[in-house]
Image 1 (cartoon, one colour):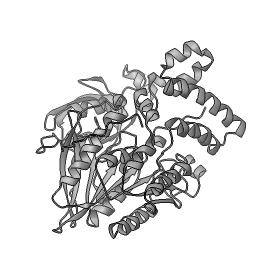
Image 2 (tube, rainbow, N blue to C red; image 1 turned 180 degrees about the horizontal axis):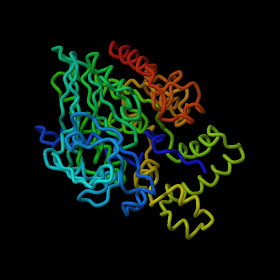
Image 3 (cartoon, rainbow, N blue to C red; image 1 turned 120 degrees about the vertical axis):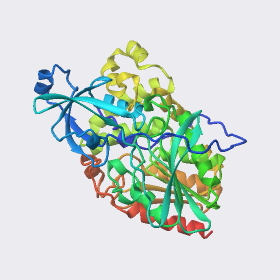
Image 4 (cartoon, rainbow, N blue to C red; image 1 turned 60 degrees about the vertical axis):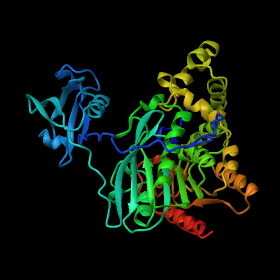
Length: 461
């Protein structure tokens, strides 16, 4: 059975009717959003025989493998090889560690019960604030926030140190709940710093940039990620774009959006309400979500080595399931009753009643959205790029975006293929190479160069 991976869906989509707001005041204020802490420790799982020895269930107990200098783990005086057994939340698991760190204010003590070489110990120390991006000689970094849906969302702004007006660069990330709160200058474009080298390039070269953390990620309030629907998430990017345009250093006639993956779906919606000079998207979709998803079920199987017969069968089953759940909006439990032969597939597609770790409402809203209608409402120049080795998305959607733009404003839309680049901007020659090594590639600058050249050409118009 072919099911797109969560990171493979870092991007995509298609629109319910999202209301166009006649008046869009910026909802922001002086930054009072607390900075969260950082444990600064990497773990491996506790082997099953060791877990049994400590009367732990499978998945409980973690072994310290790395300690980052200056952060909480060092203050706790943890050592590599220590077995972390429990905290005030009970026996330790990765989700409970994350919950504990997220819920503990910085400066407040955090305590673990550990075993070190056979000796049981309790260790305690104040939770250290997560390090801030110090910026560079060319730009400063400001930690701010916006309010969306009544909750505070962390925004991270870079501003050139050179006086004067500067173009604006608003980044909209993909689907997954990954944090973009890291130091741009040292980002490598690996899974932990996706898009970082691109953001650093524009920050270093005179742009005011803004990025925003999703609800429940980093310092942002709200969450959990699984419960956030598409329409609610739109307001986060709406407010962040307004914040960018409100900065006194920003040349409001030269503001650009870059949407990566699912960001390519949010981009045209906010740009249809808040004018920008240009929108660049990489690895997105424009057709209906149902069309995109069926292509994914069929094509990723073929890229992964399935026979054409197998891929066809999977596409037929997937089409039936997705039509029932996404279009007719039946629950997986209801479909099991009406179509019991589909039960094994339903369990695989919708573990816990979610799809790719997300509420079904998110995906159903995508299915209802008419994305061409939003692209048509923008008067921006548009660049739509597919990576040559990106197996997650399709040329058809990117060509469609350029065609939509050019029908309304001839010459405003551009479609390109980015050579030797996969969905994460990693340097692979072919789609099968990317699939086999997904998340393990080396960042290349082909798209960064392409994007920079395109924006510079648009700024002159």
